[in-house]
Structure formats: C-alpha cells, structure tokens
Length: 297
Image 1 (cartoon, one colour):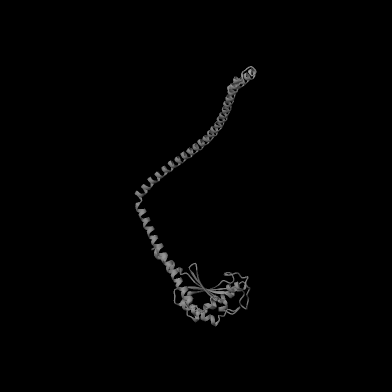
Image 2: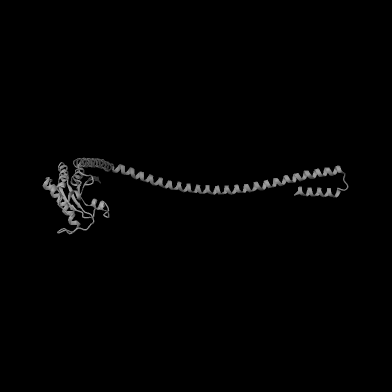
C-alpha cells in the first residue's frame, strides 16, 4: 500500500512540474517511475504466491487433522484388541491350571482313553481291509460273469457294479416271449452260464428281481404289472434252482412292476430297457456284522 502511494505521489509531482523541469530531470523521473512500477508488479506476484501458499498450508492442515483422527481411531481399536487378548490369556492360563490338575489326578483315565483310541484305529483298519476284500470279490465276480457271457449280445445283458453291489440285467426279449412268463430255451442256456459262476461262490446270496414297463397288463390270473414282474422273477428262480441246482436258500424272488425304471417309458427303446429281469448279488451283511462283533470283543 505504501508503495502504491509513493508511486502516485511521484506521478503527481511529475505532472505538476512537467512544464518547468528540464528534459534531463524528466528522464530521471520516468526512469524512477518505471523502477517503482516494476517493484509494484513484483510485490503483487509475491502477494499471490503468499496467498497460494496459505491455501496449500490450510489444505495440509486439514489433511493432517484427518490423519490424526484416523490414527486415534486405530489406536483405540488396538487398545480394545489388547484388552481382549489380555482377557483370553487369563482364560487360557486358568484352563492350563485345570489341565494340569486333570493330568495329575486322572492320568490313568487318559491312558485308558488312548488305549481305546488305538483299539478303534485297529478296528477301522480291519474294516477297511474287509471292504477291500469285498471290492476284490465283486471285481472277480464281474470278470467271471462277463467271460462266461461273452457270446451274448451286449444289448440283451448288462453286468455292472453300483455302490458296491453287482447287478446282472437280462432283457425280457431274451428271457420271455411277449406277454409271457415262460422262460425260453435260449434263455435257459444263458441262465446256466450265470448259474455256473454263482455256484462257484456258494456263500453269495442274490435276488432275482422282475421289472416291467409302464404299459398296463392283464392276462388271465395276472391282474397287472405287479403280477407279471413277480411271475417272471419266480420263473427264473425255478430254472436256477431246478435246472442248475442252486441252493434255494440263497435266492430271493421279487417283483418291482413298473416302478424302478432305468429309462423313460415314453419311447419304444426306453420301454424295452425297463422290461428286464435283474439278478442282484446281495451284500453279505451277516458276515459284515460278525466281523463287527469280533472286533468289539
């Protein structure tokens, strides 16, 4: 401000005395004016710089205040975590004291528990070994059946293992004429090959299960698909018993009617797949339970 007044005063003096000063003094005054004007511009720039620096300082102050608040919040959170850990440490120390008391007064009980655990481990190992033997038996059985029936069309007979159970599916077109439950002569030869493998494993029990498609059936004394499925199962059972001397105590005959399909019944192919007699190698549960009782002793 003082600089501006000085420049104005100098300008006024120059204007008043311009008519009576010499050219030399006028040039000197003009030079002085130019110098003062330059100084004024420089001070204006400095003022703008100072104002910019002041704004930057204010922004930095705001950021620092926010950072301080964040740090204080983190410190508060850490203090809460420290308090929580201190409480947990106290609880752990109390539990360790209790544990030392248990280990001192009940060492024999713990020793017995460990012995029981070792016995259970041995028991589980025996069960796993028995299951492995069962799986091996199933695989051997499947291989023997496939070898014995290698000359039979794959579409007429299917041998598979599902959930540790061996299934032998024989199509009804191979076993019976349409609507009949009398076993054909060709089918008797096929059943004879199956019986040979089953007779080689006299401890195995199995189920003969009749299945039909969903088309309604009634013929004479047979009222529906339940009757037909059961009659076809018992017909196969009699062949295995009477023609091939399989002990009947090993056999269960059952009918599932149309209620255990393996394919949709809305196509000709699906219905043909559902019309089948299934021989199911039953799991030897009695031997398995004997094994359980043996290992419990």
